[in-house]
Length: 84
Figure (cartoon, rainbow, N blue to C red):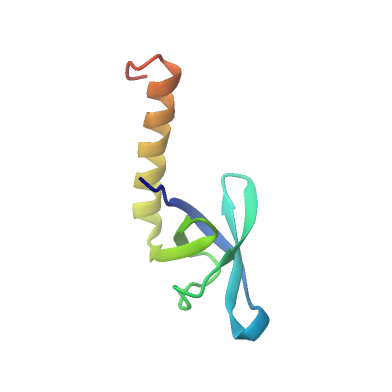
């Protein structure tokens, strides 16, 4: 199973060979990400990222919903398998 994580696009540029690239913030961590699959992504958009590639653009509401699921999963794990 693969996990795509949402993050906010903070910058966009053209890399080698005109490849769409950007930086994406994940809760304080910022990573360089390939935007070739989502060339329409702009600063302020949220994208789902897996293995350094943005796979889709999503709206802020959908990103917040995913963040809440991730927080619940972390809370469940920290509580020894019981919901937090």
